Length: 416
Ligand SMILES: [Mn+2]
Image 1: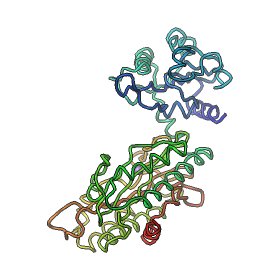
Image 2: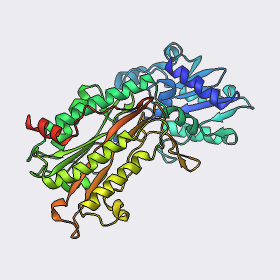
Image 3: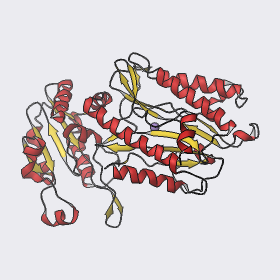
Image 4: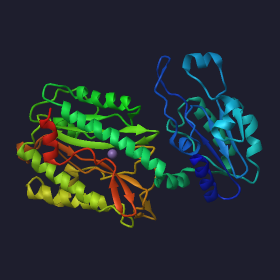
């Protein structure tokens, strides 16, 4: 029913003559006859709730039809049950269902001449992707080229505001990942490898009927200064920090959490100094979030605190040096996609937070070897990331179960 409500809401924004065509993706080949685990297209999932590959939904004020894979006894024995054409109407609440291979024989009856067709192509694979869905997408694109309008701007605005059901999924995803981060703190110790700690997340996510929402970053020592490090194969050294950026997905909704902690359970004085600045920047950035405030406020707040802190320690001489140590944004929208849809700028101005938006807050400091900096700071990379829901009253930190204060982390690690 929730998907029906979303389709109706979308159509009410698009006008009376609108027809929406939205397709999901095909399975992607990994090697030989092995495919990657399938994950549906986010827009398609949001509007239909249908999670099989190779399907196209077409809907307007008059009708809702689904083109999908037909039943196939042999393929179902090998690869799993398909919903099929006959059961689709009662399961998906469509008026009619058709074999995906008949799409171009039937589509004309749903796209009258006066219609404006809302459709986005190509998918994530780009034009070079030769999957069957993408070949359909390319044909749809050339067939209707003159009457096509992009669907993404409207649906992105809808997806930006999360409803109760979506918030529940995101809370569950944040809870599961928070637990896993704390398990990692209990497990990590000198002599283990980064992948040993990564396996904690694999195990707990799988156990929770979930999966990673992105490849996890388990970065010890100066590996933490490589922002998208994910080799995860180095030995954990006594005296180093471990930065872990890992999140999971529940019913399609992502969590995205980063914690940084000392491998031996005790922060050094230099690590405490840097960690303290990031933590204070992160807490103040979170506190700035409430409806009506610019969505750039957390970044401004974090940059100010990190600048002041690094100048005070003598690591930075002037505010212009900030991007040497803090070179990424302070947050991004979070939802069905880990870097979720929704623009931040409207007419060149940062938009305001609204109740129901979910953003990450993830300041960091990364100090590479540099003769101009005291060597006790070399190789320290710290990021702290939480998932924050904007509420009427201000905000709610979905990932607050994962401890982040220095004494909380040291206490938890002392219990190993
Ligand atoms: Mn993030």
